[in-house]
Length: 425
Image (cartoon, rainbow, N blue to C red; front, side):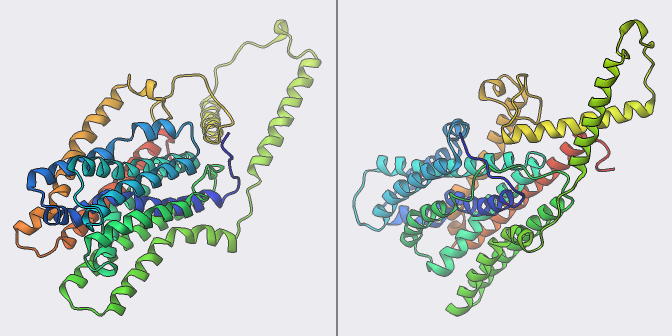
């Protein structure tokens, strides 16, 4: 059984660690940065390079096995599997591009790239599933934040590629071979199931807003510094300072648990008072039964509930639904009923729903156009006379980030306004 960590800070620590894992999960977006080396060093033609792009897409988007495993394995083990896939897959590509082992058969490189990018599915599944369970009442916001950072990862890798690695494809592949697994090993301890954050915390929405603003600042910063590094001739000290500031911005979500540590808030007593009132009501009801008040022959006719009573009953239902949702998020309660829209579905329950197939078709069509452009971004830039494609990839990454983050915010707004009437006026 997976150990659940309690407290108000651990979910936010896990969310901060998940941001780094999501950045690592964007390694498939680096394909335009080293695809030209596969073409020049290994002598591949455009058709062979396009087929390698297909392997890149298949590995990145086939997440059925990680999804099934997330319901049976702890998050650290899922991250470990992804780290091993990343190490082995990109390791073969590095051996080929660096000519350490040359020549390697084309089919082996195709499989290696597919395995390498499939690590993304393991990384993303581990952090998304874990954090959406840790924040069951803010799933849309959490998904938008994490997917947004995943979209922004291409710009982060571009900054590392152009500043630290000096536009070297072999060094980039070596960084993917060693850097990403090491990062995942460090974050394994922090990405873990936690007691869901309380919905009664008034600071929760401000915390999410802080992370969203920090991610937007990071996106604008990375895009600006990438353009400056390409347009101007900057010293190594300045460019290295750019990277240090970028790392600090990536650590911004960790400011929330630090703030909770330095300035702890007192827990609300409303839950205790509610339990006390409920206990006294139950006691009074039991006394009434003992005194004969529960006799059916002496019971008064049922009265039609007044509007105020109906309103109070609906509020009680909402609170009980919230309590049940929190209990299910922790795993303390399991209800044997068909899940409703917005709740957790098993695979067998999802595939018979029209919503599932609608989302599948929309995702298939929408993402397909984006990955087609991404895979051929380097060739598009070269055909237009650009000496490198780092700026194009940064622009692509920033647009990808804005769409993902905005999608999470908008979806959460409509979901909350529909399930919790009156919250948004």
